[in-house]
Length: 171
Image 1 (spheres, helix red, strand yellow):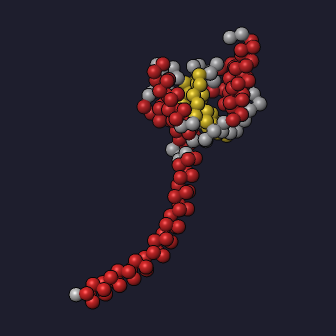
Image 2: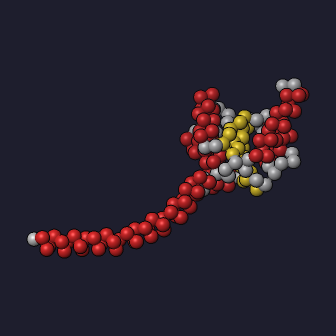
Image 3: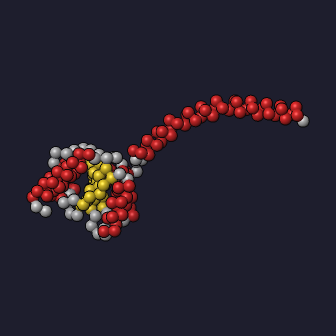
C-alpha cells in the first residue's frame, strides 16, 4: 500500500466507525479462507460486517471516534466485527467463537463504553433490535385480539342457545 491508499483506507474505516454502534475486536489466527467466508456471510445476514484490519492504520482511524478506548486491543492478527445494531455483531461473533476455537474475542466497544470478553458475550445473549420490536408488536396486538374475542363470545353463545332452542322445537 502506498501513502494515498493508506490515507483512503483510514478515511474509509473512520467513515465506517462513524456509522456503527458496536465494534468487536477479534483474533482470527488459524481460520481458513472457507471459514472466514462463512463468518462474513453470517455477519452480512445479521446486518453486520467483519473486516481484517491493519493494526497501525486502525489505531489511526480510531483517533477522534468514540471507539478510541479500544486501540490497545490491536496487537497481532486482528479483525473487527461492526454493526449498527448493538447486538448483531456480538451475537454472530460469540456464536462463531463457540463453534470454532480459532476465533478469539479480545473485547469491544459499545459506543464509548469499553467491553471486555465477558461484556461482549453478555451483550450477545440479549435479543436483537428486530427481536425486541417483534416482541413489542406482539404484546401490543395481543390485547386487541383478546378484546375482539371477548366481544364475539356473547354473540356466539347467543347463537348456540338459539340454535339449541330451534333444534328442540323442531324435534
